[in-house]
Image (cartoon, rainbow, N blue to C red):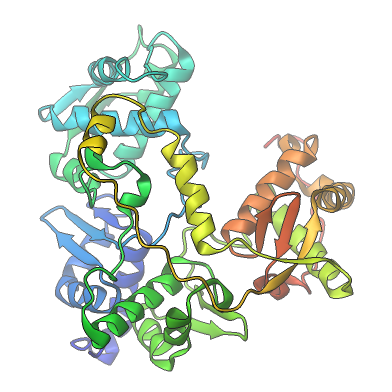
Length: 446
């Protein structure tokens, strides 16, 4: 097939902008991510639907007020959580409130008061061991309002009167009234499986292996998965994939297809490849960027790269994709009910696990840096650049190190292992980075 076959050269950039919007925001509504997004996607809906399905196996569902991209989930990605307005990742309580709020909105009419919605969520939450929602407790109200705000930003709710922040501060003296967009509510919650029948989160993962029949179909499925890997991951290392995927990743047609689809360049190196987002609109995690954790991560990456360049570091293999999926699934599955409907339904049907991914034929070894070395490097950075960091981070180098490593791991620059971290090849991109200290204003506290 030819990518963007019905798009003229003069309109190609506009079409690619629509592609990047959908990939960055799988749910687009009249207000999210902005009011110009939905008309743009609707204009190119037919071509988008064809290209995204043929190249990636994705399905685009459009309605009068929404555009929903249904992805194929190849592996677990724990690096892209829902976040609050202050960019704090949702915890398990907030995720639970979000799902219960969606369920309550699905049973509601066209309007609802925030206190009424809280009562409905609280009634369901009390039936879940260890959860609950006590509107007399400020932390519970704040977590609930974070879930409501997340839905408001995406257009499922529209504030008609009052203030959620005022209600969270004083529920007896304040109220908020919301209009409900049921179309958006139903577009948000689109699981690919009946969740009550799942014994593990791995049941949500999809592969084409079970559908593929014959050499051509197997090769086509592998090509789609290879394209998805490059789009969904910051970097794809050849040593981290099976031989069949490695061949697809090295095929020149993959880069040509993705570059025409997205308008971004695919960069190849001996160790792997990455789609370089020069637009700043495709990736949900920019690096480097503002904020102390990101700046500290950049400075730490230069220290690690310099240490690697010196040599004489011990080496070890990084966790495989299968091992990462297994570890992530164990963390998520720990929150599944141990009794009740889910356990009963899971017992009724045989538990099916996805076929294990064939392991890479070669095992790459990466330089290992101990936790002690990393802590020492962060203390040195604090001593040198601390005046440029936000006050809230200056007194806690261990927490800053944790956040910096979490960011570098999410970007594929390092791999966290027991006792330290492994320096991955992409880290070399930042080995020549220099920094200039610009002290923060004295009154700034965050």
